[in-house]
Length: 463
Image 1 (cartoon, rainbow, N blue to C red):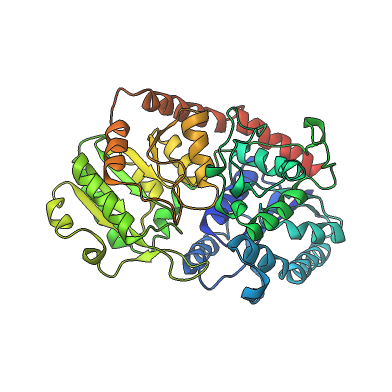
Image 2 (image 1 turned 90 degrees about the vertical axis):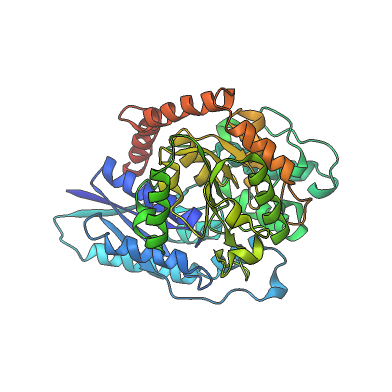
């Protein structure tokens, strides 16, 4: 009998790790001959990641998924980078010796197992910011695959970036013309590009990762035939797990009880991700906009991260950041809380709209449950996700496409207008989102497009 081993490594962030774990489950459920080893990079600034991993380990005995913690390494010193992506890329690079040793140990262990059982290491999956691990795969002669936890359009941007770089005579931040990117139908304004590519240091590290996506394929004239095979297997979602490892179960249960008492599709949910937080002045504008709109709401309002690579934390006192009297004036129609199990709330029948930072996991969850989005991006690739959802696909309401730290505030009247459009039950966006919800579920069924693509990937791995 032959068993197939696959190794994963990912950036230590909830948005990257959760899809990897869920993909591992999909792989094993589709073909039980597979077993998975996930290499865990530890970042002390992100305790929520550690909590999630601990919950996975506790339930992994019966799943053929093994979690291996890599030895800790120090973050690079500030004189080596000027951007978060630079730091993360260098941090990943420092793990290469430990990753090589962990995989070597795994291969040695497999060779010592039952001789009647043929165990083969058939693939090493990296993510969009751990491309330095391609070197490890090459040294060990293991096929390497990129698990891209974002949109196909954004992957197209990354693949096109090395070509674009040869055409630029100025930095992307200085461009005053829209960009023609093959994976987008419409020209893309520079204002919706990720913040890191608008910075010199961030751009260089982004470009460095993008170039590695295509190795050893030619970069000077990328065509469809030169891009490695792409297997679209999504949506990959954790539809139940987050409620199980929620750090504040009492708060979660209180929110769910409150939602149970609300009429169907009447509540707006506001949430800006595990690393998302907005300034105090922006919080007040959102609060005033909610009051103007007068809708029922649940607002997950964490404090912005206090340190680089830190996660948002709950405010010690919501009264200090919200407008005077806001909590009292809205006590009958709304809840303001800290970190929440987002997918559990989106699944609730009372939710009718979602004001989101447009992280790709959040978009997939909202589409799965047929909940329309109003866009308020903050960081990473969220601006270009918002652009795609509004301008390319017509699946979201625009509050702002290009908001980011340091930009002009999203004003209360913009929030009010966005909420009113979002909660218009006859708008075309809502109808399209309901259609996409059905299609996303069909895609995951046996013989659906994602299922067929996953089977094709498995065939690639085992051969």
